[in-house]
Length: 66
Image (cartoon, rainbow, N blue to C red):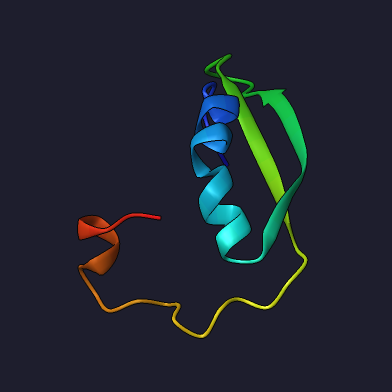
Protein backbone atom coordinates (compact mmCIF):
# COMPACT_ATOMS: atom_id res chain seq x y z
CA UNK A 1 0.00 0.00 0.00
CA UNK A 2 1.31 3.42 -0.93
CA UNK A 3 0.22 6.96 -0.18
CA UNK A 4 -0.80 9.70 -2.57
CA UNK A 5 2.69 9.92 -4.14
CA UNK A 6 2.61 6.33 -5.45
CA UNK A 7 3.26 7.38 -9.06
CA UNK A 8 6.40 9.31 -8.06
CA UNK A 9 7.62 6.38 -5.96
CA UNK A 10 6.93 3.97 -8.80
CA UNK A 11 8.96 6.14 -11.20
CA UNK A 12 11.85 6.23 -8.71
CA UNK A 13 11.68 2.44 -8.26
CA UNK A 14 11.45 1.54 -11.96
CA UNK A 15 15.12 0.53 -12.27
CA UNK A 16 15.01 -1.58 -9.09
CA UNK A 17 11.81 -3.34 -10.15
CA UNK A 18 13.30 -4.22 -13.54
CA UNK A 19 16.64 -5.29 -12.02
CA UNK A 20 14.87 -7.70 -9.66
CA UNK A 21 12.75 -9.19 -12.46
CA UNK A 22 9.48 -7.36 -12.00
CA UNK A 23 7.12 -5.20 -14.00
CA UNK A 24 4.52 -2.75 -12.70
CA UNK A 25 1.22 -4.25 -13.81
CA UNK A 26 -1.50 -2.08 -12.29
CA UNK A 27 -2.25 0.58 -9.67
CA UNK A 28 -5.50 0.73 -7.73
CA UNK A 29 -6.43 4.03 -6.08
CA UNK A 30 -8.99 4.42 -3.28
CA UNK A 31 -9.86 6.70 -0.38
CA UNK A 32 -9.70 5.62 3.26
CA UNK A 33 -13.19 5.90 4.76
CA UNK A 34 -12.51 7.70 8.06
CA UNK A 35 -9.43 9.75 7.11
CA UNK A 36 -10.55 10.53 3.56
CA UNK A 37 -6.94 10.26 2.44
CA UNK A 38 -5.76 8.69 -0.80
CA UNK A 39 -4.05 5.29 -0.86
CA UNK A 40 -2.73 3.19 -3.74
CA UNK A 41 -2.00 -0.48 -4.15
CA UNK A 42 0.64 -1.19 -6.80
CA UNK A 43 0.68 -4.66 -8.36
CA UNK A 44 4.15 -5.83 -9.44
CA UNK A 45 4.23 -8.87 -11.72
CA UNK A 46 7.27 -11.16 -11.57
CA UNK A 47 8.41 -11.73 -15.18
CA UNK A 48 11.99 -13.02 -14.71
CA UNK A 49 14.05 -14.79 -12.10
CA UNK A 50 15.85 -12.51 -9.67
CA UNK A 51 19.64 -12.47 -10.30
CA UNK A 52 21.63 -14.64 -7.88
CA UNK A 53 23.46 -11.67 -6.34
CA UNK A 54 20.22 -10.66 -4.59
CA UNK A 55 19.40 -10.38 -1.76
CA UNK A 56 22.50 -8.47 -0.78
CA UNK A 57 24.29 -8.39 2.58
CA UNK A 58 22.70 -6.31 5.36
CA UNK A 59 23.65 -2.63 5.05
CA UNK A 60 24.59 -2.84 1.36
CA UNK A 61 21.21 -1.57 0.05
CA UNK A 62 21.57 1.60 2.15
CA UNK A 63 25.13 2.21 0.97
CA UNK A 64 24.57 1.27 -2.69
CA UNK A 65 20.86 1.49 -3.61
CA UNK A 66 19.56 0.05 -6.84
